[in-house]
Length: 375
Image 1 (cartoon, helix red, strand yellow):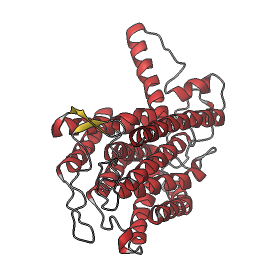
Image 2 (cartoon, rainbow, N blue to C red):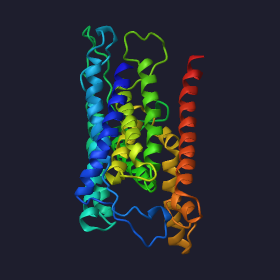
Image 3 (cartoon, rainbow, N blue to C red):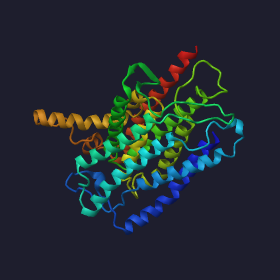
Image 4 (cartoon, rainbow, N blue to C red):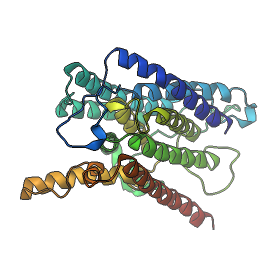
């Protein structure tokens, strides 16, 4: 637990104090977010020139905090150490965050360079997401653990991902094989990155929602660590077959803390935007969390706000192309309410409430499954 707390604290402080530096640097480089002034959105007023690509800060803060968390682990007595060395799990999770963020960074860079809201074309962004998902999907499924405890006993032979679909844990009846599992991972990465990206339309909206989802994954992973099948000290029959749950909890906590520090500057009125760099980076990490905690089918509930906003875009496109009519004044959904007269702050707070409800329901389902199994 100490390592997770250290990671959260370090990530928060690094993000909190480095974001103002990033604001000055990006402003000096004239890396301002291009704003479309013809949409009639009140939230766009006065935001022209606001620095973007702020996701670089909390991605870097997460990586630094992960290292700090591991340094904290080395100070614990041997009996309390379940895992000290960095693992494939960390490589997959941080890799998904960093390289998904890199795809977003290219998009942001092209927007800034062209001084236009159109950056990387759809095919290029899609190809980048597929490539990142495929690479880390293969790593997650083809590299089983060879980790040993201090006594020399093998603690786990699991891969980061699973060849079966999962809800609160793996569902044996839904075996899909390694190739099928890689395809599923790619789809989850694409869904999560685009979901967070579409939600990132108002000051602090995507950041705050991501904090809730990441914090929930931190709780789930730490609970799995406390009831881990690979722990030789855990004797109860009911346990979780996952790989490196403490690593997952540490990274989830670090990312949540980094986002809170960034939110200080990103909330209305935003001094900096996360850009596609941050949105795709967070989406990649959230997808990795669902895969590594074996809760892929729980993700649509846990990230309910992202699903709702994404579906508003899908519905709008289908309706317009089939009937020529729009269901919403504008999509994504937050802009529909903005055109309906809601203030930006009201939309953000109310959507945060929706995000919180989804997280609460998902955590309730996760814990109720545990209670049902042990009683």
